[in-house]
Image (tube, rainbow, N blue to C red):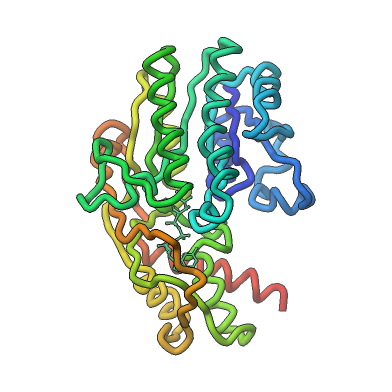
Length: 326
Ligand code: G4F
């Protein structure tokens, strides 16, 4: 039985990946951070697998090298998926140093721990389309130059480059994914898609009157998170480490997403959505659109769920969830 270690297991991506790995017969170890929220709340995304006999949780932190090294020594994972991060772009402007520490240096600590333990393992480093940031050349693919527009993007660029460096310098098996935005009913509530689906449903059910957002003109390439985690697993099943863009190849604005979400509830977003300057970022990434050709050719992967299907899935899930509490 193979063992996989996941940092960031309690997030959207970590929860889908753990389900996929457990279905494939892996033993999964998830690193969870000690914080003031109680564990059941912290791991609510893991409710489908929390009682699985092959899932273990271990306390550790990407800012604490000793904890990582201890977990590596104890569990000797065959594969490591580094999904842990301070992943909110707007928040990264407020806590830039913390973001650099967790999102950037956290990946270096993992690489150093692998090197020092001498473990023969494969590492997946979660990169982001935010690394392309202000690039005007579209669509963005693996050789596209990075131009991060936030402390989060800059930290991810560091994590990407240091992963490539450790691959070249120490012959470690490290693959970088460059994932464009990927969403689902498990998306954190302060990311724009989930904020919109939750807001639209709350308005429909009479719990809220307005939904305040920031920049409606920003365009993103949005896919379905579970499908992206299938591709992440495939990256570590290759004979050689490599870097891959995962994207749908289509881009839509935040305004388009509002239209889809409100329409699916029989409402017109223009009657409910307002703009609040506080949600604007000091520097914005205007348009992201990825070219997933390499992943299609080498991994045989492509995104299947359309944005309309994804929006419907999220709206329905939020509707059912809120309705139950009324
Ligand atoms: O949903 P968002 O916060 O996602 P963002 O910034 O694109 O980052 C996400 O995707 C990245 C992959 O490219 C990940 F690496 C990263 O960790 C994260 O998962 O914002 C999307 C867009 C932005 O342009 C933002 O300015 O929506 C715009 N927006 C407009 N109003 C808003 C809001 N974003 C948020 N979070 N909240 C708003 O009220």
